Amino acid sequence: MLLFPCLFILVFVMHFRRWSDFLVFKTHYVPAPPDRVVSSLIQAHNQWPMIHDPHLLGYLALPVAILCALALYAVGKDARPTASAAALLMTLSGVVYMGGVFGMWTAFYRGLGLVDAKYTEGATATFIALTTPSGAFQLTTTLAKLAMLGFACQGLALFGAKSVPSWAPILIAAGAALFLGFWDLDNWMLLGSLLMLAGFVPIRKCLLMETKV
Image 1 (cartoon, rainbow, N blue to C red):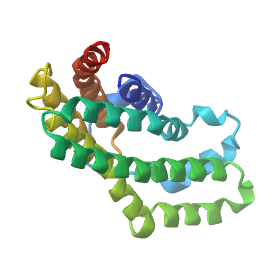
Image 2 (cartoon, rainbow, N blue to C red):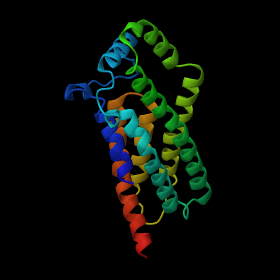
Image 3 (spheres, rainbow, N blue to C red):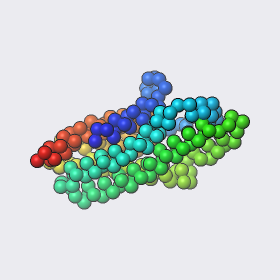
Image 4 (cartoon, helix red, strand yellow):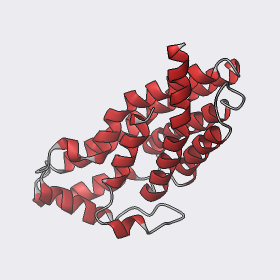
């Protein structure tokens, strides 16, 4: 339960080139100019290891997110079995689609690193078409948000659960809400991950106590 938010924190930290970038809070996502993104990726030509791509790290972290969702269900099912089960199903469904989002961005970035510089103009046009918020891209991104909506519902379902402090569900739901409200804004989502991490700590203690009993 601690590894999942910590890995996501690392994913968002890797998006910042300098500390000052974190301090720029925006209310809506403004993508970087596609021509600049494409040309820089083509020039880099995949010289860095693939694991250095934050999208790949987020992709690989998703099985841990599934375990985290199951842990939340294990703690909350006795207090609210139906709500916990429904929220778990929502989270797991969203994680599947979130894998599609991370997988797409990883494929886009690594694929552009293999393009010859003479095809930069065509690659830019293709990148714009693939990342335009419409069609299949928008559908996958929208469905991926079910993961955070599910985590928020799982957190709220913990109210009344044995040994769970009342502030923990609030932090989990608030952290997930930051994801949903500021999707693709890395500093807001980093703060959301920190809130979820703080909320997961006492839940993990409750789970360990039940395991020992």
